[in-house]
Length: 401
Ligand SMILES: Cc1ncc(COP(=O)(O)O)c(C=O)c1O
Figure 1 (cartoon, protein in one colour):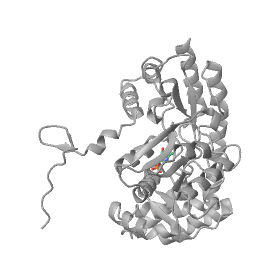
Figure 2 (cartoon, helix red, strand yellow):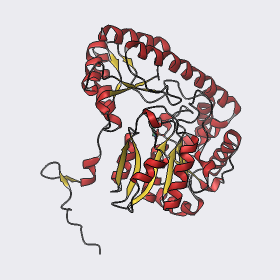
Figure 3 (cartoon, protein in one colour):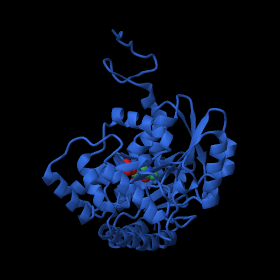
Figure 4 (cartoon, helix red, strand yellow):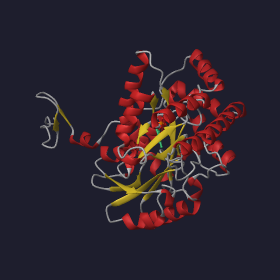
């Protein structure tokens, strides 16, 4: 019999009866969620709010995907899928790499997951032991450091700025690598900056990581949403790279919770075991629906949306610059503008709250993405129409005046 476990001395007391694990200490909420809740409250009181805080496309899921889901649900076989994903979907994703990037990936390397979130969790859990260090940028997508924390690793958040396109370089990676470092996490295009990593820098990082026997994880969730040419996949750099992607953003399926991980083939049996235990499988109806994501009919819808996002970026960036926000680099992808607001406030957290209350404009404070110059920055999301953004810019202009 397994003896009942005594409460760990490292656990955190929340009240007299319940203790939560100490690892929760390092896991912060999204500040923007509190802001969104306040925005909804104001809307319920009849106030009009321009939403430029939300990190998901305002477009609905494309009709071909919805139709495929309805058809599959009507047939009714909604049993569990294999933990690695529906074989036909893994093959469809592999074909997509061939058609879009000219890269041949074995479907055996593809794991279908509950969103990119599930893929990140699997990759980090498979690679990081307690105390191991994982390198990433500051600012970055906040969940990355929290996933590392969850498995009791150490997220090493390296301050970056416009001089490196807010991305890591081989020099930064070498300079921060030590005996406890196990890998590097990169997102390109990145959240919150929308910048792509330079191809040579990425190849250099892949080489450095390989020399050190570490792992390179590249999050390509915003691929397809690039506006000055297509991004190249890091999978072209070798079959030892871990790539994260998702149906959430480009494919317009945020709420369906479906993404994927491409991992080195030797890691797949271990990741299969992990996936079986952690999720059992990704959603069956969502996987049927996603089979329609790569059809020419659907890709035509997505490409029209990409053009709409580009037009939004091309409206918003100069409009914000004209108001006095400093935008060091034109974002090349995703749907975010990372803007310096120091001219208006040294406390972007206070600024975004005041903006919401007094101007009815919701944006995200820099603190959601790290610590480095966070108080000087805010993120605007162009996940709303140009008309709405024009109204937002009018309100910002009046507020800042
Ligand atoms: C860089 C990045 N990676 C991963 C995710 C998670 O996406 P999902 O789990 O919806 O696929 C997000 C969501 O905003 C993101 O910005």
